[in-house]
Length: 99
Image (cartoon, rainbow, N blue to C red; front, side, top):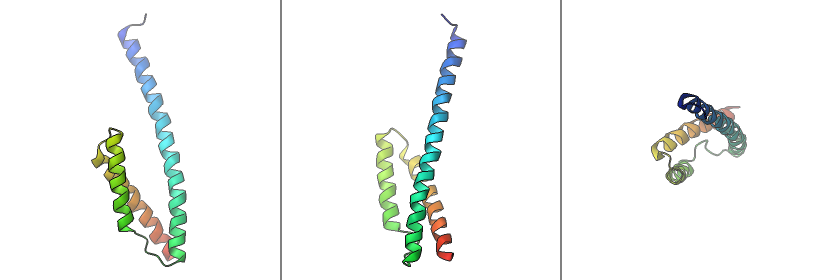
């Protein structure tokens, strides 16, 4: 039987390994998401559509806040996170329209 400090170190290592795997999943998921938003930006630029869609953004924020509550995640954090992503997407769309 291991001592409490050794056991705590093992548990800590296990949690950190899980965090590292989840971080990788997040990064690859964001990469996949941005591939789709780049295509949306291309379509918007080709058809003269505005880079931002406030109605869609509001729906997505509401949806993400609901999902966050279901996942026991702070909805305010989820809203801030999505707002950051939306800002990046709009910036990319604006760049595509200037090309």
